[in-house]
Structure formats: C-alpha cells, structure tokens
Length: 380
Image (cartoon, rainbow, N blue to C red; front, side):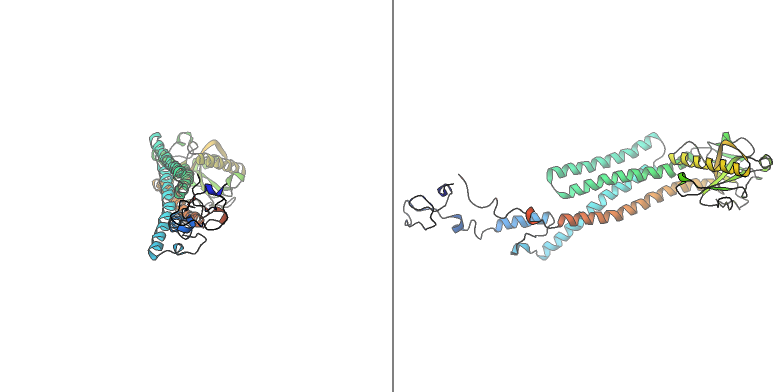
C-alpha cells in the first residue's frame, strides 16, 4: 500500500516514504500533520486500553494477569477484598442453587402421597427446576457469562440425580407406607385358615396360640439377591403344625443362618404376634422382594417336607405394626437427607474446581494482542 494513503505518514518530495523528516517549514503548504507515534496516540498512551483489559480480566476471574508488569496489574486492598467477595458469592451460587433444587425435588418426589394429584405436583416441581436451569443456559448463550453456564449445567444434573434419588426412596419406602396407611388391619388371624383374603391387608394380628417356627427356617441367597440373605420361617398354630401346611411366613433380611438362627424381629418375645404385610402388588421393589421370598419359602417347604400355598402371605414380625409402618416414612426421609448431604459435599468440590478453572489466566495464544483495535491508524 502506498504510505501516503496512511494518514500522518511522512513522505519526501517524491511522494515516497524515505524515513527522513520533512524539511518543509512550519506553516508552509507542504507541512505535514504529526504522526500518532509523535502525539502519543500509540506510544506510551495505552492507559485506557490497559484499564479496560484489567476490568475485563477481573470480571472473568483472571485477576489481572496480562503478561505485563505495569502498575495496572496490581490491585489495591479494596480491589482484593472485592474480588474475594465476588469469588465467594460465585461459589455459593454454584453450590446452593443446584443443591436447593436437589433437596426440594428429592423430598417432594420421595414423600408425596400415592395419589395422581400429589404425584403430578411433585413432578411439576422437577420440571419447573429443569426449566429454570435451561433458562440459565439460554442466558449464558446471549451474555457469555460463565456463571450462568455453570449454574445451569449443575442445575440440570441436580434435577436428574434428585429425580432418581426421590423415586428410589418412594419406591422402596414411601409407597409401602402410603399403601399401608390406606389398608385395613386384620385381627385374630388363624394361620391354619386360607391366607388369600389377607394378602391386601396392611398388618395382621394373629391368635394368641400363634408363633414362629424357629427350627425350620431358611436363609436364601442367590444371584438376584445381590448378596443379601432373605430369611423365612413358618408362622404356625397348633392346627397348622399338625398338617405341616404353611400359609403365612415371617420374613427378614440378613437375620438368619442358612438353615437355623432365625432372629428377624422380636420372635423370642411371647407378646409379639403381629406382622406388617409385604404386598405382592405395589412398588417395583415390593414385587421383587415378594418373588425372592416366594422362592425362599418354596425351598424351605421342600427342605422340611412342608406344604405351602402358591401365593403365601409374608409378614415382618413385630410388636407394633403402626410403628413399623411409620418407620418406612422415616426411612425415606433419612435416605433423602443422606443423599442431600453427599450431594452438598460433592458440589463444593465441583464448584471450587470449576471456579478455579475459570479463573486461570489464559494461555498466550488465547490473549488478544495489545495493539489490535486501538492503533490509531485509520485506513481510507
């Protein structure tokens, strides 16, 4: 390009740039305008650009690392305190907002009653939190602020994990509690009578002469049990013992040896003659447990030469059925609480790691050259 097209470029009499000063006197028609280098536009007057760069780096959490050591790279104590406060607020937002989503969703999904309206409202909360997280990601696409990306992404993860955690607690504990609360209790049940009419009861109280046969118990452990020992023992009265026919079984987990030592519940207490019914139809976990206990009962019947019905009734032996049903709800609350604490701990590490990565100074190839965009040279 002809240097004469650059404003302020000195030229000789021939119109070519020869690096010599223009000999024309001041005020003559050929006097030139001073160059940007001479006026300080480019040389030694970059304070405004450096200040903007410093503020940009502070906003991005880079702390003023520009690769140069001018006075703009140092922060005053007020700036340092302000930046520390901003760092703490950023980490708090990255931890607390997703954690509140996790805690709220897991609680409402786990504890909501087993009605269509209640379950619908619980899942609406989860969808609302998911929509809020996606909105934050959309804000990030328009603003470019990393905080929206991190909080939105962690929010989506929190919604997914909370849905899984809450659904697991609901299926394992709360659904059994709500179904038990809405079912009738049966009293003076005789173990020698058919059990079909009692399979949908919440709890049973047997006749005074009923007991658990601790001699003919069985501990079942298979591939489907996942290492857990499923224990069964016959519940008999005098009439059932005479014909060796078992219609009711006491059950428990990891509370017996393979063929002896049944100690599930207060079986040694003569005052205990009640049981909470494990329903065949209900939650997914209840159906799985019923099938495993059924396999164990039929193996025990074959081992001890007993007869048992195709669909026997399984009960958890107890002194107080109402308290045992209430323990199911407490177990759901405890499960969600433990999950929330673990999520909080993991979130602290994740938020700290993301904030540290975002605050690292950029590599040399990521920096914008200092002179670009403010050279003071205007092309015609």
